[in-house]
Image 1: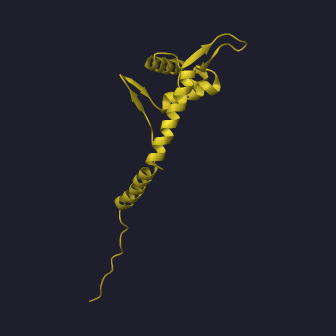
Image 2 (image 1 turned 90 degrees about the vertical axis):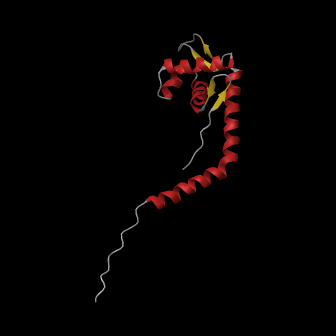
Image 3 (image 1 turned 60 degrees about the vertical axis):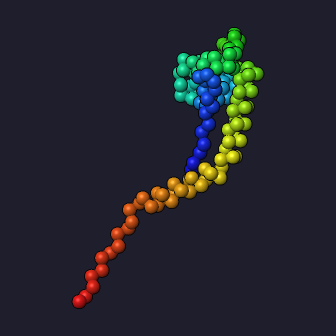
Length: 130
């Protein structure tokens, strides 16, 4: 089934897409950058680099580390991080809603094209008697 993936290119060089947004959502739900990274199959270093890249894009933190506690520190999203996730998901829903009919039409065309590209079944040869 066809799907739509959204990436927003921000000036001058920033990009926000489903990967960074999923990472922020996992940080919010798991309370840890390292746990969020593990849940997505990436190293703590990669997860931290993506958070730092997002911080740089917006000029302020989207996640903040939490210190101490019995089980060590953790992280939580800042108000900006929460707003970023909410806005991205709202844009994603709006784009998906607007494109739904066109995407379905494209998917139908793929199904039709696949049928055309398949080799035609061989017809049995019939020998006529003379």
